[in-house]
Amino acid sequence: MARKQGDQMPFLDHLEELRIRLFWILGSVVAAFAISLGVIARFGVIEYLKRPMLPYVTELTVLDPMEPFRILLSTALILALVVAMPIIVYHVWAFLSPGLYEHEKRLMVPVLAGSTVLFAAGVALAFFVVLPITLHFLHNLTLAMDLKPDYRAGGYFGFMIRMCLAFGAVFELPIVVVGLTALRIVTPQLLSRYRRHSFVGCLVLSAFVTPGSDPVSLAALTLPLYLLYELSIVLSAILYRRQNRKSAGETIGVPA
Image 1 (cartoon, helix red, strand yellow):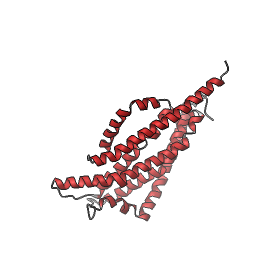
Image 2: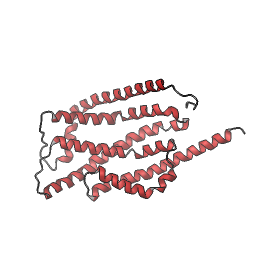
Image 3: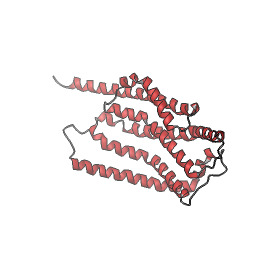
């Protein structure tokens, strides 16, 4: 049941709740990190992640003995964040939800599922589509400039991880819009009014996120990102209509 507006939690209780939820978030990431290390070692994840680079090199080089260890840790950390994301989103939502109405709290399950699916979709698009296209473009650019490629493992994995994280983050756009609509910060009318501006924004963001400046790489992110913006408008409109019906029902039920 939603907390009434007059029932405010004391400040120290807020801090205590925040401390507990941060503890759960940190604990889930640590547990997922330990599991990720085992999965990477057991199932050859590193070998699989090298595949997009194999058409351009016979082997990836390292410059110091610690580089493979850093690659292992960074890969395990990213995998841990993906695995722990539902728990992270849940505790963030649970901390903020007392200020929301009951019908807004029902968004928790769709938000948890949607954020995980969208993040995974962004990572998959980056790894399976955009990364190979970008590597092909950059490799041909290297050859065109009469340079000899000598790719390092640390450079490739860092590049791959940054791209996957960036795509996963920008794919969270519908979840952000739904949250802003629930808080009545944005409306579907406002989003529709800025459709043209949003396309330019998607194009600029795609050019910033995608290292390859060729049209194929830009389109590979710009088109899905703009479609996500359109999906955000639809979700915002559905939520906005429900909020208005709820407000109208409460108004009618209030005695004169």
